[in-house]
Image (tube, rainbow, N blue to C red):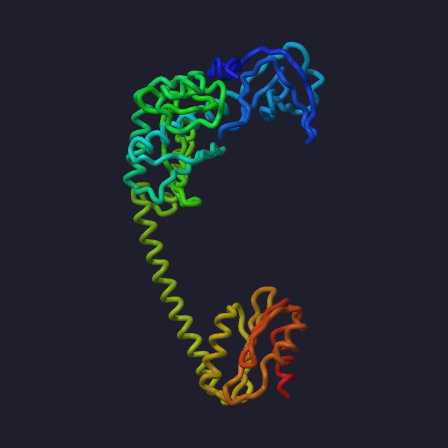
Length: 394
Protein backbone atom coordinates (compact mmCIF):
# COMPACT_ATOMS: atom_id res chain seq x y z
CA UNK A 1 0.00 0.00 0.00
CA UNK A 2 2.70 2.47 0.99
CA UNK A 3 4.29 2.21 -2.47
CA UNK A 4 1.16 3.42 -4.28
CA UNK A 5 1.71 6.68 -6.14
CA UNK A 6 -1.20 8.47 -4.46
CA UNK A 7 0.54 7.84 -1.14
CA UNK A 8 4.07 8.48 -2.41
CA UNK A 9 3.16 11.92 -3.79
CA UNK A 10 -0.33 13.17 -3.04
CA UNK A 11 0.20 16.16 -5.33
CA UNK A 12 1.01 14.00 -8.38
CA UNK A 13 -1.30 14.87 -11.27
CA UNK A 14 0.12 12.70 -14.08
CA UNK A 15 2.01 9.42 -14.15
CA UNK A 16 3.13 6.53 -16.33
CA UNK A 17 2.43 2.89 -15.56
CA UNK A 18 2.07 -0.50 -17.23
CA UNK A 19 -1.15 -2.41 -17.81
CA UNK A 20 -0.99 -5.58 -15.71
CA UNK A 21 -4.40 -7.05 -16.50
CA UNK A 22 -7.81 -6.28 -17.95
CA UNK A 23 -11.29 -7.55 -17.19
CA UNK A 24 -15.04 -7.07 -17.16
CA UNK A 25 -16.98 -7.19 -13.90
CA UNK A 26 -20.37 -8.79 -13.28
CA UNK A 27 -22.08 -5.53 -14.28
CA UNK A 28 -20.36 -5.52 -17.66
CA UNK A 29 -17.96 -2.68 -16.83
CA UNK A 30 -14.52 -2.83 -18.42
CA UNK A 31 -11.50 -2.21 -16.21
CA UNK A 32 -7.72 -2.27 -16.24
CA UNK A 33 -5.22 -2.93 -13.46
CA UNK A 34 -1.93 -1.01 -13.54
CA UNK A 35 1.53 -1.66 -12.14
CA UNK A 36 1.01 1.45 -9.98
CA UNK A 37 -1.45 4.31 -9.87
CA UNK A 38 -2.10 7.84 -8.68
CA UNK A 39 -5.89 7.26 -8.94
CA UNK A 40 -7.40 7.03 -5.46
CA UNK A 41 -10.07 4.29 -5.12
CA UNK A 42 -13.27 4.87 -3.16
CA UNK A 43 -12.66 4.24 0.53
CA UNK A 44 -12.63 5.69 4.02
CA UNK A 45 -15.47 8.07 3.24
CA UNK A 46 -13.62 9.63 0.29
CA UNK A 47 -14.91 9.20 -3.29
CA UNK A 48 -12.73 7.85 -6.09
CA UNK A 49 -10.68 9.89 -8.53
CA UNK A 50 -11.54 10.29 -12.19
CA UNK A 51 -9.40 11.25 -15.17
CA UNK A 52 -7.95 9.55 -18.25
CA UNK A 53 -5.64 6.73 -19.30
CA UNK A 54 -4.22 7.53 -22.75
CA UNK A 55 -7.21 9.89 -23.26
CA UNK A 56 -9.68 7.11 -22.40
CA UNK A 57 -11.96 8.28 -19.60
CA UNK A 58 -11.66 6.66 -16.16
CA UNK A 59 -15.16 6.64 -14.67
CA UNK A 60 -14.61 4.81 -11.38
CA UNK A 61 -11.77 3.36 -9.30
CA UNK A 62 -12.23 0.56 -6.76
CA UNK A 63 -9.95 -1.61 -4.67
CA UNK A 64 -11.11 -5.21 -5.09
CA UNK A 65 -9.13 -7.61 -2.89
CA UNK A 66 -5.48 -6.78 -3.68
CA UNK A 67 -5.96 -5.00 -7.01
CA UNK A 68 -7.05 -1.49 -7.90
CA UNK A 69 -9.45 -1.52 -10.82
CA UNK A 70 -9.73 1.47 -13.15
CA UNK A 71 -13.17 1.32 -14.76
CA UNK A 72 -13.04 2.94 -18.17
CA UNK A 73 -15.52 4.35 -20.65
CA UNK A 74 -15.67 2.00 -23.62
CA UNK A 75 -13.35 -0.75 -24.87
CA UNK A 76 -10.03 -1.51 -23.16
CA UNK A 77 -8.37 -2.99 -26.28
CA UNK A 78 -6.46 0.25 -26.90
CA UNK A 79 -4.87 0.09 -23.46
CA UNK A 80 -1.81 -2.13 -23.44
CA UNK A 81 1.78 -1.90 -22.28
CA UNK A 82 2.82 1.50 -21.00
CA UNK A 83 0.00 4.02 -20.45
CA UNK A 84 -0.15 7.65 -19.32
CA UNK A 85 -2.59 8.59 -16.57
CA UNK A 86 -3.95 12.07 -15.91
CA UNK A 87 -6.09 12.90 -12.89
CA UNK A 88 -9.11 15.18 -12.88
CA UNK A 89 -7.19 17.45 -10.55
CA UNK A 90 -10.06 19.76 -9.71
CA UNK A 91 -12.02 16.79 -8.35
CA UNK A 92 -9.04 15.28 -6.51
CA UNK A 93 -7.96 18.54 -4.88
CA UNK A 94 -11.55 19.27 -3.84
CA UNK A 95 -11.70 15.88 -2.14
CA UNK A 96 -8.37 16.54 -0.40
CA UNK A 97 -9.60 19.91 0.86
CA UNK A 98 -12.84 18.45 2.19
CA UNK A 99 -11.18 15.42 3.80
CA UNK A 100 -8.48 17.46 5.51
CA UNK A 101 -11.10 19.98 6.59
CA UNK A 102 -13.06 17.15 8.16
CA UNK A 103 -10.01 16.08 10.18
CA UNK A 104 -9.52 19.66 11.38
CA UNK A 105 -13.15 20.34 12.31
CA UNK A 106 -13.53 16.96 13.99
CA UNK A 107 -10.38 17.58 16.04
CA UNK A 108 -11.68 21.03 17.02
CA UNK A 109 -14.89 19.53 18.44
CA UNK A 110 -12.84 16.98 20.39
CA UNK A 111 -10.36 19.57 21.70
CA UNK A 112 -13.00 22.09 22.76
CA UNK A 113 -15.92 19.94 23.87
CA UNK A 114 -14.68 16.33 23.99
CA UNK A 115 -17.28 15.60 21.30
CA UNK A 116 -16.10 12.78 19.00
CA UNK A 117 -17.12 12.19 15.40
CA UNK A 118 -18.66 8.75 14.79
CA UNK A 119 -19.18 8.95 11.01
CA UNK A 120 -18.15 11.04 8.02
CA UNK A 121 -19.55 11.49 4.50
CA UNK A 122 -17.96 13.46 1.69
CA UNK A 123 -20.79 14.40 -0.66
CA UNK A 124 -20.69 16.16 -4.01
CA UNK A 125 -21.92 19.44 -2.48
CA UNK A 126 -21.50 19.23 1.29
CA UNK A 127 -19.57 17.24 3.87
CA UNK A 128 -21.21 15.85 7.00
CA UNK A 129 -19.92 14.53 10.30
CA UNK A 130 -22.09 12.87 12.94
CA UNK A 131 -21.00 13.95 16.41
CA UNK A 132 -21.82 11.81 19.44
CA UNK A 133 -23.65 14.45 21.49
CA UNK A 134 -27.32 15.17 22.19
CA UNK A 135 -27.09 18.83 21.20
CA UNK A 136 -24.73 21.53 20.00
CA UNK A 137 -25.33 25.18 20.79
CA UNK A 138 -24.77 28.01 18.34
CA UNK A 139 -21.90 29.18 20.54
CA UNK A 140 -20.22 25.77 20.31
CA UNK A 141 -20.57 25.71 16.53
CA UNK A 142 -19.06 29.18 16.25
CA UNK A 143 -16.18 28.23 18.55
CA UNK A 144 -15.37 24.99 16.69
CA UNK A 145 -15.49 26.74 13.31
CA UNK A 146 -13.22 29.52 14.57
CA UNK A 147 -10.71 27.05 16.03
CA UNK A 148 -10.65 25.07 12.78
CA UNK A 149 -10.03 28.20 10.72
CA UNK A 150 -7.26 29.25 13.09
CA UNK A 151 -5.50 25.92 12.42
CA UNK A 152 -5.91 26.51 8.69
CA UNK A 153 -4.54 30.05 8.94
CA UNK A 154 -1.48 28.80 10.80
CA UNK A 155 -0.66 26.71 7.72
CA UNK A 156 0.54 23.77 9.76
CA UNK A 157 2.11 20.77 8.01
CA UNK A 158 -0.09 17.77 7.33
CA UNK A 159 2.25 14.84 7.76
CA UNK A 160 1.73 11.17 6.91
CA UNK A 161 3.58 8.29 8.52
CA UNK A 162 3.44 4.50 8.25
CA UNK A 163 3.75 2.67 11.55
CA UNK A 164 3.23 -0.81 12.96
CA UNK A 165 0.65 -1.88 15.52
CA UNK A 166 3.35 -1.96 18.22
CA UNK A 167 4.17 1.69 17.54
CA UNK A 168 0.56 2.85 18.06
CA UNK A 169 1.15 3.37 21.78
CA UNK A 170 3.59 6.17 20.95
CA UNK A 171 0.82 8.32 19.47
CA UNK A 172 -2.18 9.96 21.07
CA UNK A 173 -4.69 8.97 18.39
CA UNK A 174 -8.06 10.69 18.21
CA UNK A 175 -9.76 7.29 17.81
CA UNK A 176 -8.78 3.64 17.65
CA UNK A 177 -7.73 2.29 14.26
CA UNK A 178 -9.59 -0.63 12.72
CA UNK A 179 -6.78 -1.93 10.49
CA UNK A 180 -3.84 -4.17 11.25
CA UNK A 181 -0.37 -4.52 9.76
CA UNK A 182 1.04 -1.31 8.30
CA UNK A 183 -0.98 1.63 9.59
CA UNK A 184 -1.01 5.05 7.97
CA UNK A 185 -1.27 8.07 10.24
CA UNK A 186 -2.30 11.55 9.16
CA UNK A 187 -0.82 14.06 11.57
CA UNK A 188 -1.31 17.75 12.21
CA UNK A 189 1.39 18.28 14.85
CA UNK A 190 0.20 19.24 18.34
CA UNK A 191 -3.43 19.09 17.17
CA UNK A 192 -4.60 15.88 15.52
CA UNK A 193 -3.28 12.34 15.18
CA UNK A 194 -5.50 10.00 13.23
CA UNK A 195 -5.30 6.74 11.31
CA UNK A 196 -6.52 7.43 7.79
CA UNK A 197 -6.07 6.02 4.29
CA UNK A 198 -7.40 9.06 2.43
CA UNK A 199 -5.62 11.83 0.54
CA UNK A 200 -4.98 15.25 2.04
CA UNK A 201 -3.04 18.38 1.05
CA UNK A 202 0.43 18.85 2.47
CA UNK A 203 -0.51 21.76 4.74
CA UNK A 204 -3.61 23.05 6.48
CA UNK A 205 -3.42 26.35 4.59
CA UNK A 206 -4.38 24.53 1.38
CA UNK A 207 -7.78 23.77 2.92
CA UNK A 208 -8.32 27.54 2.63
CA UNK A 209 -11.35 27.84 4.94
CA UNK A 210 -14.19 25.95 6.63
CA UNK A 211 -17.80 27.06 6.94
CA UNK A 212 -20.46 25.22 8.94
CA UNK A 213 -23.81 25.34 7.11
CA UNK A 214 -26.19 23.70 9.55
CA UNK A 215 -27.02 20.86 11.94
CA UNK A 216 -29.74 18.24 12.36
CA UNK A 217 -30.47 15.40 14.74
CA UNK A 218 -29.54 12.01 13.33
CA UNK A 219 -29.99 8.70 15.19
CA UNK A 220 -29.09 10.08 18.59
CA UNK A 221 -26.21 12.19 17.26
CA UNK A 222 -25.88 15.68 15.80
CA UNK A 223 -25.06 15.84 12.10
CA UNK A 224 -22.99 18.88 11.16
CA UNK A 225 -22.95 19.95 7.51
CA UNK A 226 -20.07 22.06 6.23
CA UNK A 227 -17.92 22.94 3.22
CA UNK A 228 -14.22 23.64 2.76
CA UNK A 229 -11.95 25.40 0.29
CA UNK A 230 -13.37 26.17 -3.13
CA UNK A 231 -16.79 24.96 -1.99
CA UNK A 232 -16.94 27.86 0.48
CA UNK A 233 -16.59 30.28 -2.44
CA UNK A 234 -19.22 28.39 -4.46
CA UNK A 235 -21.60 28.44 -1.49
CA UNK A 236 -20.95 32.15 -0.94
CA UNK A 237 -21.58 32.90 -4.62
CA UNK A 238 -24.86 30.96 -4.56
CA UNK A 239 -26.10 32.65 -1.41
CA UNK A 240 -24.99 36.06 -2.69
CA UNK A 241 -26.98 35.50 -5.89
CA UNK A 242 -30.09 34.44 -3.98
CA UNK A 243 -29.80 37.32 -1.52
CA UNK A 244 -29.27 39.85 -4.32
CA UNK A 245 -32.33 38.54 -6.14
CA UNK A 246 -34.47 38.72 -2.99
CA UNK A 247 -33.23 42.25 -2.24
CA UNK A 248 -33.95 43.34 -5.82
CA UNK A 249 -37.51 42.02 -5.67
CA UNK A 250 -38.05 43.73 -2.32
CA UNK A 251 -36.42 46.96 -3.59
CA UNK A 252 -34.17 47.22 -0.54
CA UNK A 253 -30.41 46.95 0.11
CA UNK A 254 -29.21 43.39 0.76
CA UNK A 255 -28.53 44.11 4.45
CA UNK A 256 -32.20 45.06 4.88
CA UNK A 257 -33.62 42.09 2.97
CA UNK A 258 -34.36 39.96 6.05
CA UNK A 259 -36.23 42.70 7.93
CA UNK A 260 -38.13 43.70 4.77
CA UNK A 261 -39.17 40.10 4.17
CA UNK A 262 -40.31 39.79 7.79
CA UNK A 263 -42.55 42.82 7.34
CA UNK A 264 -44.05 41.38 4.16
CA UNK A 265 -44.75 38.03 5.81
CA UNK A 266 -46.36 39.75 8.79
CA UNK A 267 -48.53 41.79 6.46
CA UNK A 268 -49.45 38.65 4.52
CA UNK A 269 -50.50 36.83 7.69
CA UNK A 270 -52.66 39.76 8.71
CA UNK A 271 -54.20 39.86 5.23
CA UNK A 272 -54.90 36.13 5.35
CA UNK A 273 -56.63 36.55 8.72
CA UNK A 274 -58.73 39.40 7.35
CA UNK A 275 -59.61 37.37 4.25
CA UNK A 276 -60.60 34.39 6.38
CA UNK A 277 -62.83 36.63 8.49
CA UNK A 278 -64.41 38.08 5.33
CA UNK A 279 -65.09 34.58 3.99
CA UNK A 280 -66.68 33.61 7.30
CA UNK A 281 -68.92 36.66 7.11
CA UNK A 282 -69.84 35.87 3.50
CA UNK A 283 -70.72 32.27 4.38
CA UNK A 284 -72.94 33.44 7.23
CA UNK A 285 -74.62 35.93 4.91
CA UNK A 286 -75.20 33.26 2.25
CA UNK A 287 -76.52 30.82 4.85
CA UNK A 288 -78.95 33.43 6.16
CA UNK A 289 -80.18 34.17 2.63
CA UNK A 290 -80.73 30.48 1.86
CA UNK A 291 -82.47 29.77 5.19
CA UNK A 292 -84.89 32.66 4.61
CA UNK A 293 -86.38 30.80 1.65
CA UNK A 294 -88.07 28.39 4.10
CA UNK A 295 -87.85 25.64 1.48
CA UNK A 296 -87.77 21.99 2.55
CA UNK A 297 -85.07 21.32 -0.05
CA UNK A 298 -82.46 24.09 -0.33
CA UNK A 299 -80.16 24.00 -3.37
CA UNK A 300 -77.34 26.22 -4.59
CA UNK A 301 -74.59 26.10 -7.20
CA UNK A 302 -71.23 27.86 -6.88
CA UNK A 303 -67.94 28.40 -8.69
CA UNK A 304 -64.52 27.80 -7.13
CA UNK A 305 -65.70 26.90 -3.63
CA UNK A 306 -63.63 24.55 -1.49
CA UNK A 307 -65.13 21.45 0.04
CA UNK A 308 -64.56 22.94 3.49
CA UNK A 309 -66.61 26.01 2.54
CA UNK A 310 -69.46 23.88 1.17
CA UNK A 311 -69.49 21.75 4.33
CA UNK A 312 -69.52 24.75 6.64
CA UNK A 313 -72.30 26.43 4.68
CA UNK A 314 -74.38 23.24 4.78
CA UNK A 315 -73.87 22.80 8.55
CA UNK A 316 -74.85 26.42 9.23
CA UNK A 317 -78.06 26.07 7.21
CA UNK A 318 -79.28 22.78 8.74
CA UNK A 319 -78.50 24.08 12.22
CA UNK A 320 -80.99 26.90 11.57
CA UNK A 321 -83.45 24.95 9.42
CA UNK A 322 -83.81 21.61 11.19
CA UNK A 323 -86.47 20.32 8.79
CA UNK A 324 -84.49 21.12 5.62
CA UNK A 325 -82.21 19.18 3.31
CA UNK A 326 -79.34 21.14 1.74
CA UNK A 327 -77.82 20.24 -1.65
CA UNK A 328 -74.75 22.26 -2.67
CA UNK A 329 -72.63 21.88 -5.80
CA UNK A 330 -69.45 23.71 -6.85
CA UNK A 331 -67.73 23.80 -10.23
CA UNK A 332 -63.95 23.92 -9.81
CA UNK A 333 -62.29 24.07 -13.24
CA UNK A 334 -62.66 20.51 -14.63
CA UNK A 335 -64.06 19.08 -11.37
CA UNK A 336 -67.44 18.96 -9.66
CA UNK A 337 -67.90 18.77 -5.89
CA UNK A 338 -71.08 18.35 -3.87
CA UNK A 339 -72.36 18.28 -0.30
CA UNK A 340 -75.70 17.00 0.93
CA UNK A 341 -76.84 17.55 4.53
CA UNK A 342 -80.07 17.14 6.53
CA UNK A 343 -81.55 18.85 9.56
CA UNK A 344 -82.11 16.95 12.81
CA UNK A 345 -85.83 16.49 12.09
CA UNK A 346 -85.22 14.79 8.73
CA UNK A 347 -84.98 10.99 8.59
CA UNK A 348 -83.81 10.56 4.98
CA UNK A 349 -80.23 9.23 4.73
CA UNK A 350 -77.87 11.42 2.76
CA UNK A 351 -75.96 8.31 1.71
CA UNK A 352 -78.70 7.63 -0.82
CA UNK A 353 -77.92 10.97 -2.48
CA UNK A 354 -74.19 10.19 -2.65
CA UNK A 355 -74.95 6.78 -4.18
CA UNK A 356 -76.90 8.56 -6.94
CA UNK A 357 -74.47 11.43 -7.54
CA UNK A 358 -71.05 9.76 -7.50
CA UNK A 359 -71.51 7.48 -10.56
CA UNK A 360 -72.65 10.48 -12.61
CA UNK A 361 -69.30 12.21 -12.17
CA UNK A 362 -67.07 9.14 -11.84
CA UNK A 363 -66.35 10.39 -8.36
CA UNK A 364 -65.35 9.40 -4.88
CA UNK A 365 -66.83 10.45 -1.60
CA UNK A 366 -68.23 9.44 1.74
CA UNK A 367 -69.94 10.61 4.88
CA UNK A 368 -72.76 9.71 7.23
CA UNK A 369 -76.56 9.61 7.22
CA UNK A 370 -76.46 13.28 8.29
CA UNK A 371 -73.97 14.61 5.72
CA UNK A 372 -72.14 13.34 2.64
CA UNK A 373 -69.64 14.88 0.31
CA UNK A 374 -67.91 13.88 -2.90
CA UNK A 375 -66.09 15.04 -5.99
CA UNK A 376 -65.36 13.87 -9.50
CA UNK A 377 -65.11 14.73 -13.17
CA UNK A 378 -67.07 17.52 -14.88
CA UNK A 379 -69.11 15.04 -16.94
CA UNK A 380 -72.43 16.86 -16.47
CA UNK A 381 -73.46 20.40 -15.57
CA UNK A 382 -74.00 21.63 -12.03
CA UNK A 383 -77.72 21.95 -12.79
CA UNK A 384 -77.92 18.34 -13.98
CA UNK A 385 -76.07 17.12 -10.87
CA UNK A 386 -78.41 19.05 -8.57
CA UNK A 387 -81.45 17.72 -10.42
CA UNK A 388 -80.22 14.12 -10.08
CA UNK A 389 -79.63 14.60 -6.36
CA UNK A 390 -83.14 15.99 -5.92
CA UNK A 391 -84.66 12.99 -7.70
CA UNK A 392 -83.65 10.82 -4.76
CA UNK A 393 -85.81 12.95 -2.49
CA UNK A 394 -89.01 12.77 -4.60
